[in-house]
Image (cartoon, rainbow, N blue to C red; front, side):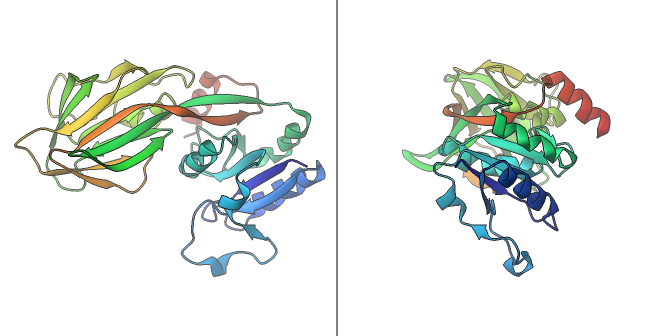
Length: 287
């Protein structure tokens, strides 16, 4: 019996109605269904008593698939754990845009196609980010959407040196810089004026944020490049690095963040026959 994990976002699916409906549909098609929270809650007392919750770290190894309920943020959070276990993700949009989600809450009946094999898998490239302080590694993570180095909340610009394969590509004097995958091109990168890139493309996007000059523009680099970001000498002493919108890491002058293509790929499940352009037209039209 194939095991499917349901990961609800309690702040999106507040009454767990979508999870209950998906559980019943999948069980009727012969799947073993486990419900796991994708993150810790501040108050577990609000969880319904009629749903048994399992530990994600115990259920994820060997799972057939994860069905993730929420917006893009929930899917991004889930992507790292699922990717490290090689488990595909099917997103159900409970948020607003939901670019990575395959189904809307009203389309749960289509989950039956998982039993008949009527689906495909999209392989999405990820980024590998490492922060060095002197010779020590102080941070390492993987990213499906983007890596952002920013000035934080302080109302002053940050001066960054961005290099590709150890050759200077950009001096970014402004709010910061975004290094994004094609999947992340429709997120913060797009808001900052960067290009929209097809998810199947093999590129790394470098987009300055509110650049305080007339020449800084986005760069579409090869996925073979190694991007490094460093605070310019004699400027602000710190900046902040965030991966996929997660908790920010303070980086100091002399620290070097390197970003390159990861050996891992996120597997996204596709049920509906639609192109990337269908998705962006629908999402932007309805937003």
